[in-house]
Image (cartoon, rainbow, N blue to C red; front, top):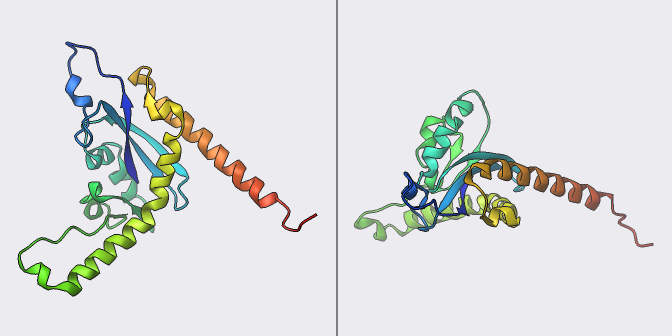
Length: 183
């Protein structure tokens, strides 16, 4: 699970709420889309498009993800550090990387720091397909930078996700159907 920023046109001058589209991360006019993908990077859910200034965890809560995960069992979602705190609300179903340890005397505990870095590395390695799935979504020109009305962005994201899923399924099926013996 991750949220991706999609650049959009700047709202017109003297319009209310103009500053809410400015992303706190990259200082661009953007909207955020919540993307959930499987372990192979194929999009399962693309939706809940919000203004760029909304935090990732707030977007997930507003999407009803906490309530949805309360009704499921034996499901694990890997998320980045922007979702820390959701694990407690979802009975550990949202897994985030361990928090950075801070303190004066921690640099002397090399074994603890090494274990902490290994845990963060393992988590980020497992999340790479999610990041690749989002990158495949943004390869489509309509999502690299959205030039039309911001109201149409959620429909565009869902359409691109549907086309991408179909393309990946077709490509995977064709790869399985290829003969393995030379002719």
